[in-house]
Structures are given as C-alpha cells and as structure tokens.
Image 1 (cartoon, rainbow, N blue to C red):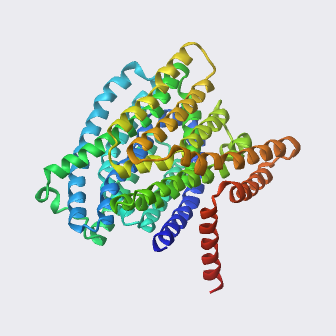
Image 2 (image 1 turned 180 degrees about the vertical axis):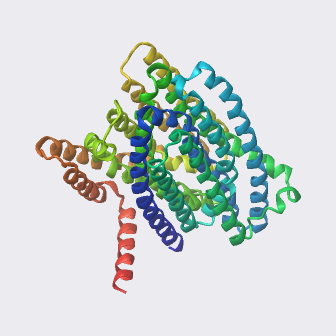
Image 3 (image 1 turned 90 degrees about the vertical axis):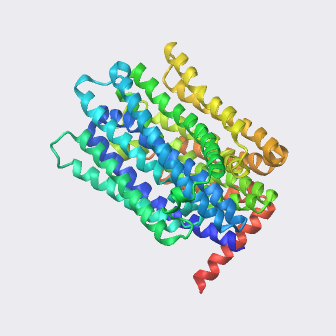
Amino acid sequence: MRAANRVALNTSILYLRMLVTAGITLYTTRIVLNILGSTDYGLFNLVAGIVLMLSFLNTTMASSTQRFLSFYQGAGDLAMQKRVFSNSMLLHIVIAIIIVAALEIAGLFLFNGTLNIPANRLEATRFVYHFMAATVFFNVVVVPFNGALIAHENMIWVAVVNVIETLLKLGIALLLTVLSYDRLMVYGALTALVSVVSFLLYAFYCLRKYADCSLSGITVQADKPLLKELSTFAGWNLLGTLCGLGRTQGLAILLNIFLGAVINAAYGIANQVAAQLNFFSATLLRALNPQIMKSEGANDRPRMLRLAMMASKFGFFLLAVIAVPACFEMEAILKLWLKNVPPHTVVFCQLILIATLINQLTIGLQSAAQAIGNIKYYQIVVGTTLLLNLPIAYILLSLHYPVYAVIISYAVVEFIACVLRMFFLRHLGGLSIRTYLSRVVYREVIPLIIVLLVGVLATKYIHYHYRFLITIPLTGFVFGLSIYFFGLCADEKILMRNFMDKIKQKITG
C-alpha cells in the first residue's frame, strides 16, 4: 500500500509539472516560430533535432542506470548501489565524448551539400549544430544523476528542474523579440546553455542528498565486471534507442532532401505536439518504473508483469483521452496556437499521434524487458524493425507518393514492433499473451470506439468557431466514463475506488 501511495504521489507531482511546462512550452514555440519564420524554424528543428533526440536518449540511458539502482534497492544492497553509480558515471563520460566526436565528424559531411539548406543560412545552421553537439555532452553526463533521482522516486526535484528549464526557454524566446543579431544563432547558443544549467542543478542536488551518489569513487571503485555488465546493458539499450531516434531524425533528413526546409517545420511541430501530449502517459510510466524494477530485484516476477500491464493500459488511456479529441480538432487548435500553420502540419500531427497511441499499447512491456535485463536480441529485432521506416520512406518519396504516406508507414511499422514486443516478453518473462490481450488490449477497444463515435458526431453536428472548447471536454468526459465501466478490470476498479476514498479523506480532514 505504501508503494501504491508513493506511485500516486509521484504521478501527481509529475502531472502538475507537465501542466505547467506544457503550457509554457507551447506558448514558447508560438513565439519562436513567429520570430524565426518557417524556414529558420525548420532549419533549427532539422539541426537541433539532435537535442530532441538526446532528450529521449537521456531518458532511456537514465532508465539503464535506474534499472540497476532500483534492482539493488529491491535487493537491499547499498554497497552495490554505490558501485553502480560510480561506474555508471565513468561509463557515461566516455559515451558522451564518443557521441560528441561522432557528431562533429558527421557534421563535416552533412553541411557539405548533403542537407537542403539555403546558402545564406548555411553558416548560421552550422553554428547552431556545433552548439547542439556540445550540449550533448551535458545531456549524457547528467544521466546517472537523473537515474538516481528516479530510482529514489524523487520526482519533486525532477519537476523543479523541468520547470526551471521551461522558464529559461521562455525567457530566451522573449529575448529574441528585442534582438537584431542573427536570431537563429542566438537561439541555438542560449538553448544549449539551458542544458548546462540543468546539469548543474541535478548534480549539486544528488551529490548533497544521496549517499550512493559520489564522484570520489569514479576511479577508485572502477569495477571491470560491473562496468562490463553496465556497458553491455547500456549498449544494447542505446542501440534500441538510437534505432528509434534514427528513424525519427532520419525521416526529418529524408523529408528535407526531397521537400526542403519548410516541411521540417511541420514535422518538427508534429513531433513536439506528440511529445507534449505523451507527457500524460510518460509521467505514469516514470512513476511506475522504479516499482517495476524493484519487483524484479525482489524476485517478484508476477507483480512486475502486473505493473507492466497496468502501465500499458493506463498509459494508452491517459494519452488517448487528450490525443483522440485533439485529432478531431487539430486544425483549430494549431491555428489558435501558432497563427501561421506550416503546410501539412495538421495531417502530420494527427498521424504521429496515432503512431504514438499504437506505441502505448506495449509501453509497459518495454519497461518489463528492461527490468529482466536480457535485452540483446529484443533490441536488435525491435530496433531493426523501427529502422525499416527509412527505406520505406525513401521508396515512397521517390515514387512521388503524398508526403503523409511516410507517416502512415511510420504507424504501420510501430504496430509491427508492438506485436514483436509481446512475443519477446512471452519468451523473456513468461508473459501470457492471452492475459495481456484480455486485460490490456481488448479493454481498450470499447472505450476507444465510444470516444471515436462521440468525436465524429460532435464534429458533424456542432458548428461553432471555438467548437474544440466543447468537443474536447465532452469527449474526455465520455471517454473517462467508458474507461471506468468497460476499460478497467474488477481489481483495478477496487484500487481506483480506494484511491478516490483516500483523496476524499484527506480533503475532508
């Protein structure tokens, strides 16, 4: 019960963080798009996609460190936690240096005629690229500290740092409105500085707060067997992440080569919308992850799989309750948000949200695979499947198919990856696919059908300039009721009622 309360508290903290940061981030994007214009904003998203990639890379690599820290917390071994942190720190410093060197070498080829960049913006784009590459070092080295905070289930400081980052980015956007110097270059340099501030805040807090976080043991406690285990796990984890990120950024490069910089603005905005809405489910997963890892560390495989199934089901619902109505009203939302909406942005946003929803079907299974630890073949097969998007996209664009066909293929490949994850977890962890389908996937079908019908009827019969102010709350309310009556199993309804009773008791004092 204490673990459940902690998950609920951490989820609440992260949701509050999400509401604050999402609102500020969306407003910041609007300012930056209007100041930079579609071309410069598209170029920034093309080049600074490295930072977006590394934000996901940060999360995934942090989960590697957090997996071992949480695992040994579940086993009650403090000495091993200290060894894990010090060796993880050493490993990530090496990884950071290698990645930065690789990015600088890649830059020599990307800016030598490979990318479709207007000649008068080439030097500014190259300048931003160097700053983004330097930012990578701090984004990688901060990973062990981030992993330690998640392992200790301290979401308060994570939320504080995220809010500070968001406010700094808003300040940068406002500063651009009064500057006359090249705004793209200023924006790139100052955005890079934010990651340095974030690193210092995480490092200072963890080194003062937690006994298992210490820099003094990086060389003294270097443990070759443990370092090999950490590097092997992180390496395979990194492979899987890079495959996903390579798909995302590879599509950006292909779109740029075939269609130019403006299409990158639409693609960048669509990914940002999906990332902001995905905070709803990612927040729950972040709160559940430590418990999933600790359950495996305590040799409680059934509980670990139950939590993984819960993460998949509720992650899907938490994203769908916002994403589905948003898809119906995407055009109105984007016009209100951005004013000047780049071409293809609406359909890109809708299709990428659908692909993200498909990913949520097995999001908990990804954490379960991490907890078990035997991820070599899992990452090779699933990662390679995701990369199939690139040759498929190249063929579609070469044959002059509509640009949205590329994103449709993105969603289809994501579905194939979901199926593969289920079969791998059956092999790795003894997951019953029949149980998974009955408790997770089938339970999502009826609520989804109901909300789709409500969305279709609402958009057909309600004609009002700000219709989304009606349709989004209406579909959200109906979806919430259908989730409770059709989406939850009997034991989950009991947990939900108990949680609501606790909230009422605290409110009434």
